[in-house]
Image (cartoon, rainbow, N blue to C red; front, side):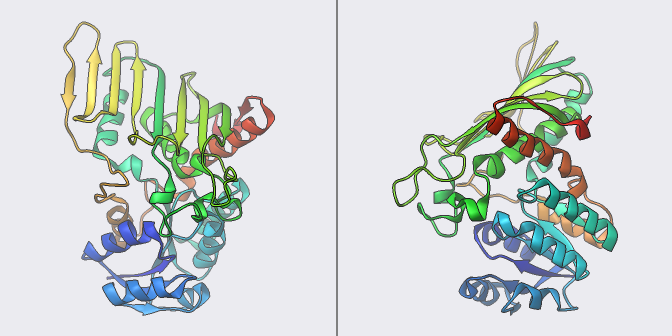
Length: 347
């Protein structure tokens, strides 16, 4: 039985990590820490386990085998590195960290301590994305030429544990990045997964168009990010992340090839629509993707617990996510400088 500790008891912990751990028969929730102690107390009362006064106190408990880091972005690296050095395996929420150096240090520490580090890039785990990857690799739409992938919704102020314009997502000191880190990392990681290629060049615009904090001023992080990605094999496409899709959530990806196109989570009624030259469209109904309003099992916790039970590296290990984080930080640089940015480490 794997003993689990939770570092951060906010919304993502409450709706995904904690209930999914609770449903898994191979693990037990034994400890909770949150800076606002009452949230940890609420979780302990609901699921059982102990409340700790500090993260360090939780990490010092020899009973705990592994932790989920569900804190605000700025704390990811510090908590992860402390946990690894304390002998705990770590599942860290995305974005991995707020600097590339921190991301690299997390991976380095995991190797040095021989502990598992996994990042919550759940989009790789949806059945439609897994099937799409196999079909693309099998040449179903021919040679891939271009793509567009997007993730947009009305913003985190309705999702955060503290709803409203004072959410930590809008606070640059805690979030560091906005829509790009919250949503863009998902689709950056996903397009690399689907195509089996890394982003090697990006031209990006990160901007704040509409979101305002409680004082009426535009928030200090981006609410929209639009990137042109060039992949290692020459494929070029766009990635858009937005917190201003107010009417409906969009979590779609369309891949265009020499024999046709594949539309993933683009049609509300069908998870994959395959359109090939000279053929009738094919509809592949695998599963619908999670939305903020429709939470389903992410698959992350079940994969994580399996990896812990078998002491094996996850398919979404920290090291595997580094290339996507490089693209995120390169996109931030591109937006700031107004120039395309090369990512030589991804070639």
